[in-house]
Amino acid sequence: MTENQPDLLVFGRKLRSLRKAKGLTLQELGARVGRPAPYLSQLETGKREPRLLLTDALAQALGVTTAELLDGTVDDRRAQLEIAVERAQAEPLYRTLGLAHLQPTARVPDVALEHVVSLYRQLADRVERAAVSQEGARRSNAELRVDMRSRDNHFTEIEAAAAASLSTVGWQGAGAVAERTIIDLAASFGFRIRRVPDLPAQTRAVTDLRHGIIFIPQRNAAPTRTARSVIVQTLGRFALGHAEPVDFSDYLRQQVEANYFAGAVLVPASAAVPFLAGAKARHDLSVEDLKEVFYVSYEMAAHRFTNLATEHLGLAVHFLRADEDGVISKAYENDGLPFPTDSFGAIEGQRACRHWGTRAAFEAADAFDIHYQYTETPAGTYWSATHIEADEPPHHAITVGVRARDARFFRGDDTTQRHTSRCPDPQCCRQPSTDRSARWAGMVYPAPRQHTPVLTAYPVEAFPGVDMTSVLEFLERQATP
Image (cartoon, rainbow, N blue to C red; front, side, top):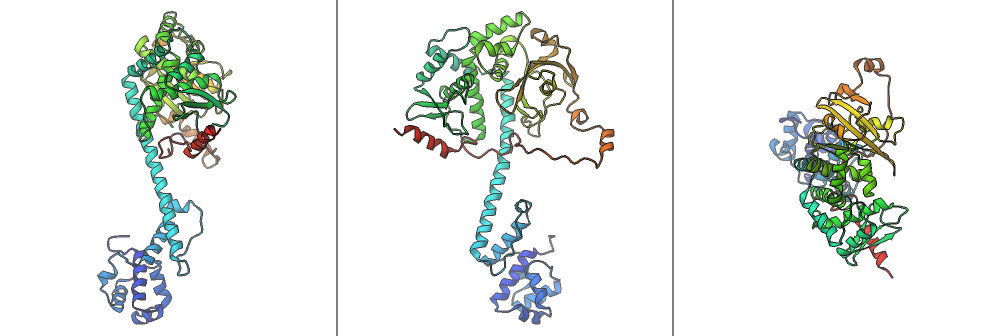
C-alpha cells in the first residue's frame, strides 16, 4: 500500500458499513454510481482497487466526502473483526497452521470471529515472547561469560562459602568428600535427603521447605556421583542466598553459581590445589585423575579444573561441551581459542570446527578413550584432551585444553594427533569446496533430522521447563500419610 493508495480491506469494510447505514443494497448503490453489484461486492471484500472517479461517486451517493471515505478508519465492530481475521490469515505465522481460509461472511457470527482474532493474537504473542526470550538467553550467556573470563572463572566468594560449609561439618580430608559428610551438610542447612521413585520428570531434585526435605531420584535413576552433585547444587542455593529468579538472566547466574558451589564442595580447593600442583610438577596433569580421586563426573572435574588452573597453576585454559554434531552447549576460555559466536557473542548453539578434538574424538578408533590432539588455528596452536561422556544418551564430548606451550604439563602431550582448523573461514568445514559444490549442484536433497536447537525458546517462567503443577502434586503426595 502506497501513500496515495487506500488500504483495500479497510476501504471495503467502510464502504459496506456506510452502505448498510444508508439502507442500500448492492444493486441500489450500483444503480447510483453506474456499476454492477458484483463489482461493488469485490470492492467491499477488498479484492478490487477503486478508481478515483468511482470513489468520488460512491462518496456522493453515500452522503460523505471523499476524504471521509478514504480516511483509513472504520468504526463498525463487525467490520473491524473481519479486517482483523483477513489480516491474520495473510500472515506467514497463520499460514504455518495449515488451515483452510476462513471467509468472514455474514453467516459467521461475531463471537466466532472474536475467538479467531483472540486465539491468533495469543499465538503471535507467545511466538514473539519466545523470540525475545531466545535473544535474551543468548545475551545473558554472553554477558555471563565475559564476567567469568574477567575472573579467570575463579569466584573467590563462592570458594569461601564452600569452605565455610565444609568447616561447619568438620571436614578436613584430602580426597573425596564422603556421602556421610554430604548428609551432615544437608542437615546443617536444615534438610534431610529422601530418595523417591516418582520425582517429576522435568526435575533433578525437589526441595520441600515446609518439611525440610530434599527429594532426589532413587539410585537406579540417579547414580551416586550424580546424586551427590544434585544434593550439593541444591544446598548451594541456600548457602549463596538465592531467591526465586526474577528473569532468565537471574536464573542462569544462579545455575552457574550453584554448580560452582557444588564443585567447590565436592572438589575442595584445600585438597585439589596441592593434588594438581604436584601433578603439574610431574608434568602429569589429568582431568581423569581429578575425577577419580574426588569421585565426581568427568564434566564436573573439567569445570573444577578451569576454576583452579589459572588462579593456582598459572595456566590459561579452555573448556567446551558439545554433542556428536559439534553443537556447543557449554564453553569457556581465557587462552584465546577462537570459539564460534553469534551476533550477540554467545557460543552456545554454535557448531565447533569439525577438525577440533571435540569432534575428532567421535571418529577415533576408540571413541571412549581420552582423545589427545594438537590443533593449528588462526589464533595459534592448542593442545586438548577430550572425553566422551557415555553414561546417558545422547553422548557428548567434554574437552579441556591449553596453548601448545603449556601442553608439557599434561598427560598426553606426546600425542601424534595433529589437525588444522581455519575456522571461522567458511571454507574450512562449514561449506563444501567450490569443485565439490559444482559436481553435485542440483543433485542432492537431504532430509534433515528433527532436533531441538540449543537456547531456542526458553519459557518465560521462574524455573524454565519445570511444570510447577506436577511439582506441587508430587509434594502433596509425599505429605499424605
